[in-house]
Image (cartoon, rainbow, N blue to C red; front, side, top):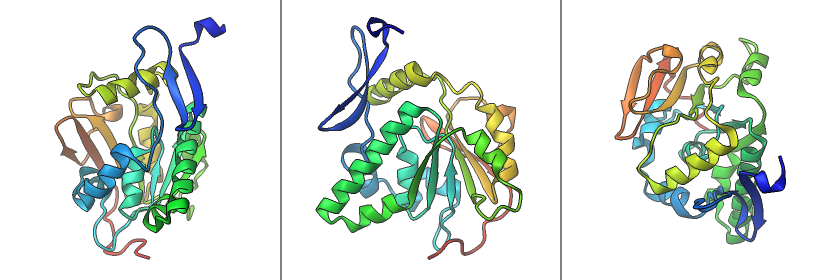
Length: 241
């Protein structure tokens, strides 16, 4: 692709690494920020363990599932789960999105160290990021593998219209960069085979079931829902360190 035909650019400045769509009427840049803005607000005022995602993964007193997030995206849901005490392993197959995430995590760690924010350092310490294909990683896990996750979390891209300007901006950037996750259906079966306790799929509220398979139950909000595929009952205590 010639430079004058590029659809987006990666820019590095004082605010960090950012993805910028090019062309007339392009929205503002997209970057990962775990310190300010929405992430910080949700951390402080998001509702704690009463949030839908917390209920979906089964988080409760003395139960902190280890979560494998196979579609990390901007890492927002992973950060919420880590802030609530879960250890979260993030996988992202897009090299560009991975770099945005890695930059956001690095800046957050530097900021936490400089400000002496021990709580934020603990949250970030529960997050690990890998570049690669989630399906290939699942295939590498043996049934009795001790590193098998308690919960596998999937939030594939879905081409739904959104009202929020911020979401619209990010969806435009992501669809331009990676397109929709056309192979998302292929993740459900291996995820069900490798998760210890459950698989959770985040979907737009009116979207069809992933792979056409109905979940055991749903947790629904105004714009999105969490489909929960329970495999085994969570124990009364789990990773309660």
